[in-house]
Amino acid sequence: MRITRFEDIEAWKAAQEMTRGIYKVTEPGRFGTDFDLARQLRRAAGSAMSNIAEGFDAGTDPEFLRFLRMAFRSSTEVQSHLHIAVDAGHIDRPTFDRLYSNARDTKGLIGGFMRYLNHRRHRTDSKSASSASR
Image 1 (cartoon, helix red, strand yellow):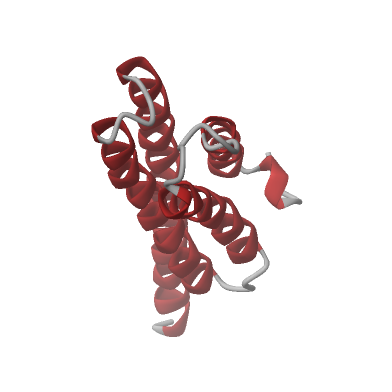
Image 2 (cartoon, rainbow, N blue to C red):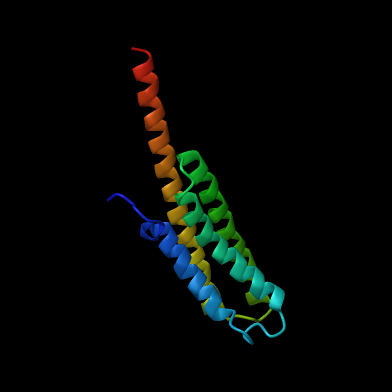
């Protein structure tokens, strides 16, 4: 299947699901007065989604990979902030587990997509090199 829009990318869909969950648990009042942590969680989750989308229009695989690495790191940031949220009592352990799993799954899909793009890039480079040697 050829991907024609970023919304078709499985990693983006996972990031959207992760972001949806983060926004739900950080609704006003849920984190008390810890506005900074709620804001950081929202920014990190949204950044994962946005970087996948932005990378889609980057034009080259190396540039897309750069954005995917940022999305991967943003998902890791979500995981780290979730530890703070559960330790501070803003979320319970089942909520932590569910959201942490969403972030882990998102990272897995981003990582898989990165491996695919790297493989495709190296395969294209190999074809170009063997054509040039003829």
